[in-house]
Length: 321
Image (cartoon, rainbow, N blue to C red; front, side, top):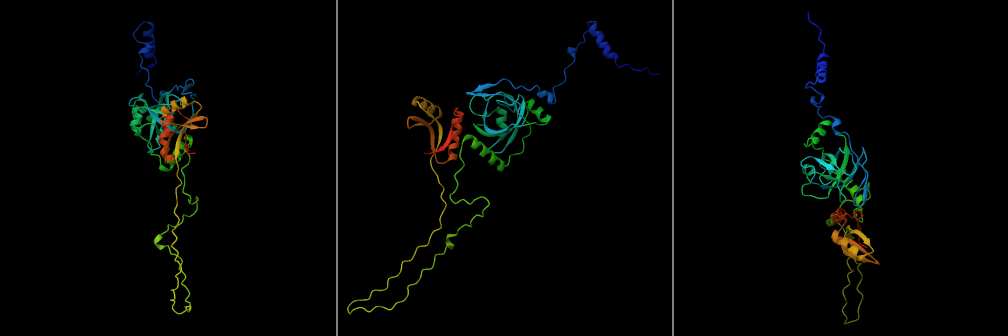
């Protein structure tokens, strides 16, 4: 006959050994491995801080989605991580290159960037995965996401999460336009004879098929009798009109500048120009600091990014006066 087993005896024995000065203790029991969502808690926000005169207040924003520029940092090593100024630590974001559409998952672990106008600072590992090696001021979209635990665990242990599907070109164009508006870049100039949206485009003109109006033939008239000894002059032919060439579209262009700022002191203007690699020009009693000229707004974009990275967040692209 089997006797019933009392499963509480082992626990009682452990308690008895502990009470008697035995070697068993609570500290000898290994702690459970950190896994699951609890491994990302507690999240840290921290106190407000100031960068280049702007105060940033960390906040737990769930639907964070913005565009801007990414800078490369040295922290984080080969891990796919990032520094952000306001998102919780840690949190997870998808970073999309507006140049290629490539999107990767990144773990936000640090505060920053601590200088410049970039919205996020990527670790060397993140830079390598998204393909920004050797670049600076990369245009990106940063969107906060809630990835599955298996991907969180990969990033926590310094590994790489699978890349996301590339962003389509149509959405990249919308995001790039949003970034342009944030930076004060005007819309691209259009052709003077651009057809409105929804209207049918005119068929292309084949110059070889352009016909001119037929030239009216002179009416035959009887020769007028002349006095003897004077020759009659031949009738004068009417002038023939030249074929009319079809009008062609002309793109209106001009000179474009990156406006750094306007200063009352020439010394301050010279200092700003030296820092940004710009030129100083007089504007009444003020001194204007500008970069350029450029053939169009697109060619001025790199200079605008350079000015903003130098700390001139109010820099704008303007057309020449």
